[in-house]
Amino acid sequence: MACYVGRVATFAALLLVAANGGFAATDEPIEIFDAHLHYNWEPKPFYQLDEVLALFKKHRVTGILATSRPNTGTHALMGAKADGLQVVPFIRPYRVRADIGSWFNDPVIFDLVQDEFKRGYYRGVGEFHLSGKAADRHGEEDRRLRGGP
Image 1 (cartoon, rainbow, N blue to C red):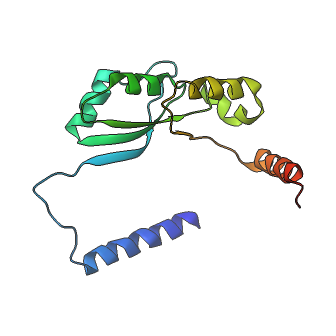
Image 2: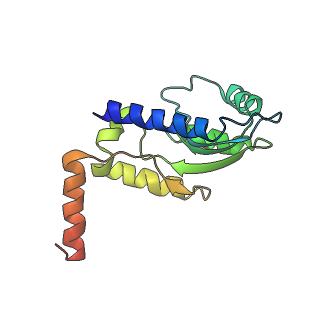
């Protein structure tokens, strides 16, 4: 069902573009802000930092919302202070991929987030995953703490 809905939405979007005269051609390439970049270093980066920065420059990526697992990749992007690149760093509450399913119950992760925040440059926390019974349990705990239904 979701696949069908996605195809219908894509088709509708293409019809809308066609009805409005199609895509406008431009001689000047646009600048790009990547609002969901993962620069994971688990166990090491696939692309080295200098390669990543060169790709950003080549493709006119002038801003990124950066997260990484562990946060080492984000540290490297911030430390590079690359000309023409704005980095918006977010803390990721994972050290390794396995943390995705357990970060919310792990006191070490709470300490990790607190330590990362002390760096002073983070602008948010994310991306993180919470679903199923874990989300229900935390919702119940939140309601209990607020004294609500």
